[in-house]
Length: 587
Image (cartoon, rainbow, N blue to C red):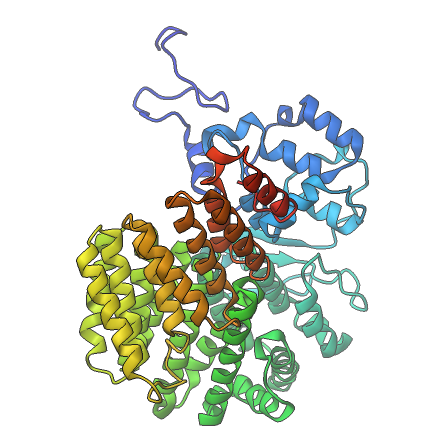
């Protein structure tokens, strides 16, 4: 062993082996990999700081959260700034602005919320100013569950038989402390709505699958999308195995009220009572899926799309993901003659989910959903939807600065779109190609594609189909996107002209796009040296952004505002700063 001066140690104090080239032990490396999924384990001395003592003395969970996030212990894994408000929000099922308000606002007094935060962050009970309620159930605990034979357990659930092969899967125990009173943690309203109609008699019979459903509804709020899909697959297999062990009459009764609960949830907003009943029957028996059921599901998606146009992605994302899982479940038993139609709807939903994730700054999930949309469209032989998915993937890559990937995706879309007669989709493909060329610094190629897009819109009068996946393309949007590209290419005067044209042509129902166009005009004024007009226009864009809570739009407001920092002492910028106070748009 080397001398003390030569010996290396992990941040946790573990001595590092000589053949370990990194700075972390195996346990801390695992923690690094898992850092986005769940709060890290911390040592007892972690909590012994003056900042924590002040926060606990003030009985302010928001101050405790801030002390937790900014603790130096986290820096080796999460970086010099510690844990972000956004990441903490993921663990708690909250948005970044909600975490900010809790940290900076008055103390929370609700005991359920306090207990949920304390348990999530693993705060030692002896440090708290309140008593944690006795736990009625344990949720999302990883235990080995049998992959083969199962035997009844004393708690009414299922436990693995001795010697059975095991696989790791999440489970939950003791869903019901009292079968006449459900014990649900915060955020389980959906599960309560599903369980209560079943009555006390069914509650005990279905304890095990409901445990699993409860786990899924919790986990879906905190795990990345890919893991959520994996959990969903596990759940499906588990429920199919479990269904073989129960009385068929009881099973159909369960499915009846479960399907009724699903179709009256936000996932089916936009359907009348008759349409909901028809969908419920299809959920119970997927072989009963027909054209009307599929059309109903597509109607639900269109309803969400119109909501997102005006209110932003945060309002509709969870509903669209629920619709996506519903269609995914129906695909298994769907009649063969209708499978292509249902796959096309699945592709449309996945593309929408991808773009909403992108607007919420989750590019990895956005890419994954759109790639699944492309695959489903190709299986359905729907060239238009496959093209649209590729267009989105090109835009996501371009937005990240990956010009060559953006060009490659756009080229693939160009080769497919020639096989369609969807004019708006051709416009979309040209615009996405132009954006990729702008990121690559190719002015001439970029403008050529915008000319093609504008020519397509000019020839589409009265011919564009409202059913096009690119239904939202219009002259104002093309002008706005052209303004963005011109700014990237260092052409502020041309960019201002395009942005002004876009604002004159915009449909005000597309609030997020209108805000982006306004911010681009402000940036063009700034690049041209007109600080006063830039500050005024940027303020207008920020005001529009408050109506559409897109994380991408919020970041754009912050970045545009930050460009004014060299002129922060001017009256125009000071007035803008005052306008932005309290809107969480500070740079």
